[in-house]
Length: 573
Image (cartoon, rainbow, N blue to C red):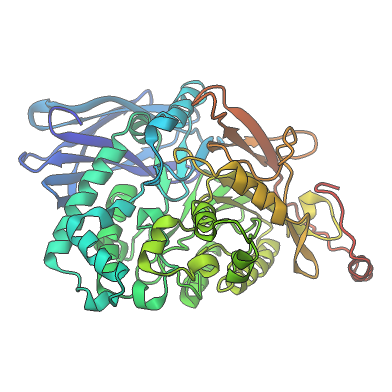
């Protein structure tokens, strides 16, 4: 925090088409100041422009000022310098800049998730929040990033239940009282949660490394459970819908929208909102230039043990995707939870077969970062083992997953567009794929959908024991339907456990072309050696080709023969 009572600035990416870039800048400033601040922008292509701020909201003694930015693209990439000033040109924040691509230039962008620490982790053991963010900033100095995609868990808000009045309620529930008999969400709870979250966000976003990235790289974010609290959407109905859970959720939603989208809930309900979805669902469609569409899918707001999203939300998603113009080659979907991932059976039966292994110790270790954590057990819900492990392959979500993948296949065939996924949540990294079996040329395979898992940039990675467990239960190839297969790819060829890696990481994305693939995207996972915190990160890359017209379908008789013989090959044969 600066001595003048200002937090920020925070850069938000809006969109970028063939001619125009849009976004916003936001600061938090002490409400004791009554003047309206201005953002002053300049670049080689335009003179200094002053943008009047408007107050989005005020909480906890801070006013949140937003500055809407619109920049016309030029033939060349632009570095836009900016500062924030108060009345009589008093400087509130200065020395910042961000980069806007040139007309037709492919975006250079990055993705990350899990940018905070679980309550059980000592940040000092991992060098605090900053090491990998500083690695991003060092690469930004050489080859600027035009955008940063936050894939969920940008902040860990689980500590809201450490607020005394909420902790008191939690202890009553933990002792066996029914949630709504232990107390309803009160004005006092609302104020306590609000004050806690204002300070939590302000201090976290001011972290060394992260604050620099927020000020220099335009961000676009979507939430996962820790942006609310651990396991949200996977609790049984009597907890999920109780007064305190719902009240805390509304407060957390307020700050998610404010800090991560520079808006209020009321703004999201307007016709010109950049977010879409029924009720409290906040998906988005943005463009990284004329060739790449980014679709952020809110699979958290409406999540229950029985569904990932409502039928209305799925329909709105595909309706929105129909708007993507034919000039777009790649549609990258941000799903906070992986579609493709080893499924570890966590049933009570299997736990009982483990004999001498301490059952609860193992559960805690597995849930440590497999979709839920130890803290969930405070709500007296040990049956959360499988159902609360809220991945797409959990029992209640498998049907949503299958229908989504098959419908997406039809969509990409009609559009001739390559669909890929960027996912987080699991504190590991890796690459999976859906594909046609028998194999066809990848450039003509509409079922080829690559999934890049990048998690986490700050939080501690999953321990080696969990990585071993993942590989133990992973099979080479799994079936989605009679022509669609899925698998985790052995990307990490220099390791025996080569499909899922338990190291902190982030992902770089850029265009690439060679004699084999024109108009492809290159996804590079930068992984950290835990013995060299933040230093000499090692890259692992995968190329995603665009989908070419003239989709190839294997002859039906060949499919039947292959199925009859249970044929399966290597990862890329």
